[in-house]
Length: 370
Ligand SMILES: *Cc1c(COP(=O)(O)O)cnc(C)c1O
Image (cartoon, rainbow, N blue to C red; front, side, top):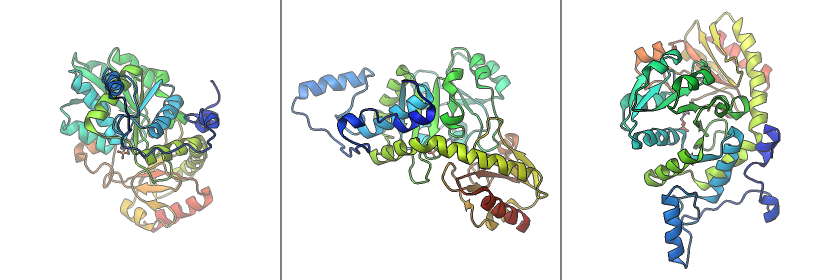
């Protein structure tokens, strides 16, 4: 069925509920599924091992509530499959392990990336070797053993943008992974530009209320089979209650992102002329994230906000502010941080659903106090 995104956001993953006589999606907490026919179970396990989508054997193989969220997210991103994980980092890890397991451990990364992803690649913890490249240098950085090109656009925390179609083009047969956490499928569907893997920290906008952790990869059938196999082997499964909450979160995703983006655009205007603000970063794509450099002490701004929540993370109903150099990107070496534009005075604001005048009043008094 083809309908508007905000219509699909409400109905995706729920298409069968009316026929089941249900309104809310059922939550299946089972960790195991009794079966009297073990010969049939053996056949189903073989089917899973061969890359098939199988549920109802054991919770680490698959869960029906989580699958509803996976189907819904895949539909919104325009892919046939999605595989959910316990967190965004578990999702990124599975994609890296997938490359390693195919004998292609070389990864090309475009900075800046989320601090945790940057650290995972820099440390080589999963057996990968990273080459950092600007978008225009990526083609030259590819090797026969390159398994993945990794990019965020808009990127965390500078909100710098990469032309995804151009990047995919430059990568030829090498798959491009786009972390779409900041844009969400409401503002950008990287699959349309040829990205083979689209990752989300579902903890952020997909959940949307700051009360559930999760990660998800939207992709094609072949990648999904490999990722499900990796998830089974390594155990980073999403809890069924998290699956339920994420599915519920998707239904309001378009409305939340659009409302927060409109407020963010207004705050960008006002921040741009504030005497305590040196520069403002806001993507051409729009969105609820704004980052800005202050002339004074960034810690004093964080300490002075009263309505805005001083916390890491993003994508919640409330507005959050944080200092990337101290928190989300602390784990990135100082030179690499500065090189990627994450300066000492940079603050990142994730705009929520409060009234714009209330937010401005709080920001303005915090900037003046600093
Ligand atoms: C938060 C975040 C992650 C990590 O996700 P978790 O759910 O915290 O593991 C990855 N990428 C981006 C862009 C993020 O903002």
